[in-house]
Structures are given as C-alpha cells and as structure tokens.
Image (tube, rainbow, N blue to C red; front, side, top):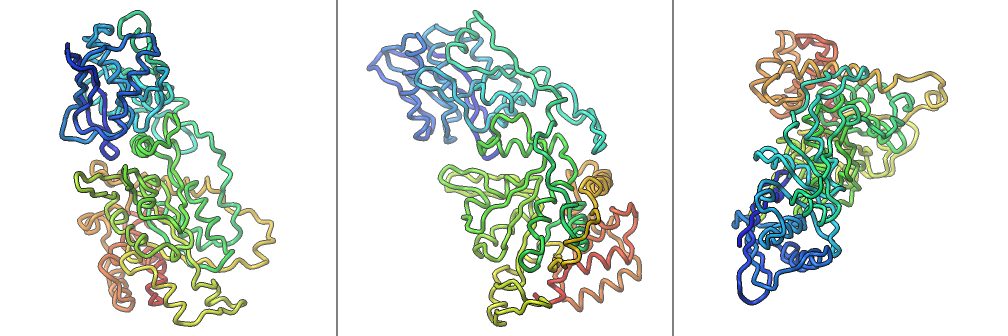
Length: 531
C-alpha cells in the first residue's frame, strides 16, 4: 500500500513543499529513503523504527521504500522523521491516510517517540499556508513561532511609536498550527480519537518586548556631533564609520543606536524572525519584536560574517537584517572578510554559491564601524602623543579598501571627552526623544515610496535621486565645487545626496537646502583628509 504525507524542506530562508511517499511491499525487510537525502535524513530510518516501536505500534517486517519528492532537490535536516513515521503507519492502515495526506508534518523523533524541535519552522509554516494547507503539526517547542501566522488582528496600537494598529499583518484564520509532544498524540489525532489543540497568538502580547531599555543616549556625556550624525544615519538607515581615540565613547554610542531606530513593521519583524528561525536562534519566541544589534568579534571567519558552512547557515550580516551590525576595531578585521561586505551593503542581500545550488539570504542592515585613527589610537590627539610612524598609520588605515569606504555614507569623528563634560550633571537628550524624530522622518520616506518596497532613503536608486533630490542653482554650484576638491566617486556623490535628503526629512522640508547639503558633505571627513 502507498501512503502520502507532506512536509517542508529549507532552501535558504525559504521552504519548499516536499511530498513523502511510503510504499510497503513484500520482500527482504528493510527501510530505504530515496530522493537525495543527506546523512541526517538517511539516519532517520533507525530513529523512526525505534520511535514507532517504543510508542506501542508494530513495525512492518517488509520492504519499505520512502520517496521524497521532488527527487532532484537535496533534503537536509531531521524534520523528516515525523512525516516518514506517519507515512509508514498510514501505509500499514494504523493512521487515517486521507486525513494525513491533507496535513503538513515536521519534527525530529526521539527514540521513545517524543517530537523534538527543528530549525526553520516559521518559513515552513509560511510555505504550507501559501500552498493551501490548513493544518500543520509541529513540535511543541516550535509551535509559537509558527503560530504568528494565525493571528487575525493587526499590530496593536502603541502610543510610544504611533504605529497603525490594524491592517499591518496577514490574515491567518484558516491556518491552524497544532503542537505535538509525542508521536502517539499525532496518531490519535489523525484517527480522530483525540484532539491536538490549535495554538493561536494574541496580538496584544506579540509585540511585547521583554528586554529592558537600559541603553539610553542620555548616558553618553558630550559627543553632540556624533549623536547628531547617528540620528541622521538612523533616520535614513545609512552606514556609519566612527573614528576616535580609545575611550571616546564609540562603543557606547553604537550600542544605543538600536534604541533610536523606528519600531519594526509586521513585515520586517516576520523577515527577521524567519532568518532567526532558519538559524535555529528563535528559541520558540513568537516574533522578533525589536531591531537586532549584532557585534561580532574581529576574528570572525568569512562564513561567520556572511553565512555559509558545510550546511549553509545565515551569517552575522543576515542576523542583523533590519537592525544594526556593529564592527568594532574595524581595521582589525581581515581584509578579505571586510571586502565580503560589498554585496550586502550594495544589494541588501548575500548569495552563497555552491556547486549544486546558490542560496540567497537577506542582509539589509545599518553598518556601524568604529576605529582608532592609528594603531596606538592617539594620532592627532592634542594631549597624548602618537607613537606610530607615518608608514604604520598609512598601512593601518589602508586595511579598509576604497570600495568599502565608498559604501559608508557618514564618517563621524569622535574626539576624546573633556573632563568638564564627564563631571557635568546636566541631562542629555533621551533616546525616546531622538526616536520620535527618526520615526517621523521614516514615515515621510515610507509615504514617498508607497509601492516600491523601499523603507528608507539609503535604498533609493538613481531614478529616485533625480526626482526627490533636486538641488537649486546655488546648491548645485556648491556641490560641484565639493566634488572636484574632494575627488568624490560617483557612488559617494549619490550617497551625499541621500544623506542630504534624510537631513531635510528630519526637518520635514520638501526641498534640499544648502544647509542640508553642507551638513551631508561634512560627514565625508575621510574624503576631506584623503584617507
């Protein structure tokens, strides 16, 4: 007898539907899995056999063939255990085959029949829902992330950010997520003898952020120029490089940037949660409700930064999707690792090519780099002398290639904080006040590009620059002079226009004025110093 069930297999951050066909025929006893299974899937035959027997069901003493279709796609992961077990029991007549064929199953089986969690359940649930299935059985430890799709209400209104309260999420009333703890629970449900509860998500708790906002801009003494630059960067999602001596507050500033970024929309939160689900880092959290801050060490490998490995996984650039990627001691990263940032900085995604397949992960993030002006850190300091030779300084700065530097919109100098500023008792501006201005500027940008998939000014293409970044005659004359004197590339030219557009948006100005353009130009300090 042949029985069919369905499951999903990961392909990058997406999932594809896989049909599990089970045939039990007379012949030498054995279980074979075909359809390009990897070693983990091949080993499932031993886990499945033990799980079925230890759950109190007989295992057929016949020839069992399991086919995973489409056969041309390599199948990876332990999530095939549960659908294979249900398929075998359906082929034996112990499970209602018609009901099992209308559902999607996913989960790893322990030898005693327990259903264990697997990575990537959120994109699998999205694929199952989009393919027309109404029921999906998942491990209980993964169910909350998939249940996000079942919420019928929109995002609840929050006075702090002024975001809309409805119409911000897809309807999911017809899709049911059923958590399972044991194989026997799945069998009894398929046979109609018991019920697997449907897990639903409460929209009012979906956006609850449990992490305390303990990192605030008011903690940073002085550095008003750097704070202003980071506000501009946050408003337009621009990349930033901070240059200053040790102890000037570069890391403190960077750690607080995620607190001034606008709240995530449902679409952005779902994208970020999907990446974390594939990486196995969601930890049964229903949704990533805040923008992520990633700060990898400078010894990170190529695969760790952009993704890859024997079994490709998202790297730090993808884990920072819709958030902040902070690279402290920027020149200390290996040159080849830094150069790998070219593609994600330009295109907002990273492609990992293998002999059989190429996987694409999203990587739209705000890059913040921090560096010293020289190896000792005191080049140009008015108090402490620099002990580095000119050749050493040049070699140190040369670790950042021109193409990478071109892709960074703002170069912010962060000088040492004076003692008078440190001991000052005055209150600095809170992150909440800055976030309010940033959110208003982002709202202007969303209204400017309603149907183009553009979330910020940093994503504008040349056709948008011509339309929304027009300069008057005085501004154009001043800009022409700056381009000639600084020797700016075409990419730097466009990025200055984007930054000027963002500065104008912060002031709710329809046109880019000379003062906006001048501020944008002065953020190219490394070009001015012929870095």
